[in-house]
Length: 444
Image 1 (cartoon, rainbow, N blue to C red):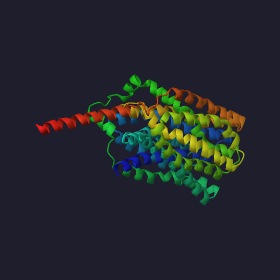
Image 2: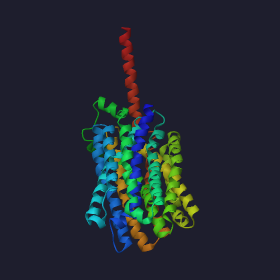
Image 3: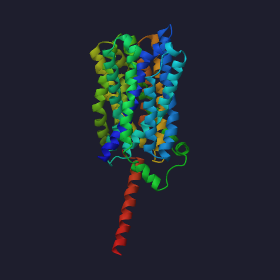
Image 4: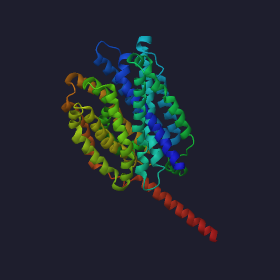
C-alpha cells in the first residue's frame, strides 16, 4: 500500500500539470486569442496568444532552480506540495479572469502573470514527481516506476479534452465563449484538493533520506551541478529538444493547425489528440516495464528514429481523411512519443547523483521545454506564410529530432551504469556491516 500511494502521489501532480497544460494550449487558439488579444488580423491574435503560452515555458527554468534547490536541500515532498498549489491555483484563477472587453489591457496582463506563476510552479513539478517514483522504486523495476508519473500526460490531456468536449457539446458557440470555457479551469481546484490529500500522507524518498542522514546534502546544489555535472545538463537539453518540439505540436498546436489550416472541426481535432492519449495509456507502462530489461537508451534511439522517419509523412497524411489523421496521432503521439516519454524521467534522472538530482533533472529538462514552448508562435508565423506545407513543417521537426538523435547515440546506457545503483549498493553494504556488528555484540 505504501508504494502504491507513492505512485499515486507522483502521478496526481503530473495529471494536474498536463491537464493545465492542455487547457491553456487549447484555450489559447480557441478562446484567448479572441477574448484577451483581439485584433483585426486573426493571425496576429493567435501569435500574441501563443506568445503567452511560450512565456509560461520561459518561467519554468527559473522555477526548476528554486524548487530543485528546495527538493535537494529540504526534501522532495516539501517542494512538491508547493508546486501543486502554484500549478492548480493559477489555473483556477484563470477561470475567473475578466476579458479584454471588460477591463481592457489588464485582462491580457493578468493572464500573462498567471501563466508565469503556472510555468514557475510547473518547473519544479515534473522532476520531483519522477524522483518520488524512481527513488522509491524496488531494485530492478525503476523503469516501470519512473513511467507511472508519465501517465499524467495522457490522463491529464484526456481529462482536459473531455472537459472541453463536454462543455462544447452542451453549449452554443456564443455560450462557450461567454462562460463555458471557464468551467474546465475552475475544475482544477478539485484536482488540487485530491493531490494535497494524497501527498500529505507520504514519506520522504529513501534516496534523499539516506543522503540527509549521512550529511551528504549539497549546500548549493546548483553550484555542485554545474561544477560536476554540466555535461549531463547539456546532454539532456539536447536529448529533449527534438521530441519536445514535435510533442508540443501534436498535443497542443495540432488543435489550431487542424481547425484553421486543414478545415477539420474542433471535435475531430480533439478526438485525434484523445486517440493518441488513450494509446499512451497502454504504451507508457509497457515500455517502462521493458526498459528495465532492454535498457532506456535502445528504446529512446529507436523511437527518435521512428519520429524522424515519419516527420514529413505525418504532415502529408493527416489532411487526407479523419481516419488517417486518427491513425497518425495514435502512431506518432501514442506509440513513438509515448515510448520516448515513458523512459525519459528514469533515463535522465539516472545521470545525476542524489544530492543534485532534483535540480539537475528539473533544470535541464525545463530549459529544453522553454525552447519548445515557443514552437507554436513560430509555427503560426510559418503557417501564415507558407500554409500547411508538409515539407516545411516536417523539415522543422526533423531538424530538432536530428539533434536529439545524434546526442542519444553518445548517451550512456543508464540501465548498466547508474548512480542509483551505487547508492543502493552502499546502503546494502552499510546494512550488512551493521548487522554483522550487531551479531558480534550479541555473541559477546
